[in-house]
Length: 105
Image (cartoon, rainbow, N blue to C red; front, side, top):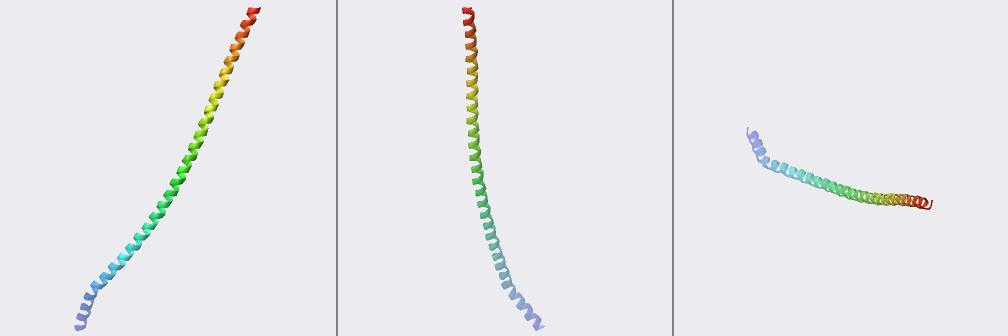
């Protein structure tokens, strides 16, 4: 009976030490998990920054293409306006020429 009592006393006195040891292990595990989470977050941040840079570059390229398309459209409009003016001038010249022929006739 004395042996059982001594074993019980030893177990009860060891319990706080074991509890502290378990808490220490849990704290270490939590620390390492938090560190791994922080490293993952840093990698994700760097990936997001790289994607943002790529998107900005793509947007700048698209803007340059849009500007070139706008310039092309403006040039085509100017050419169409010039062609219309030329046609109008030719019609006026033909009318004036016909009137001159009738007057001479």
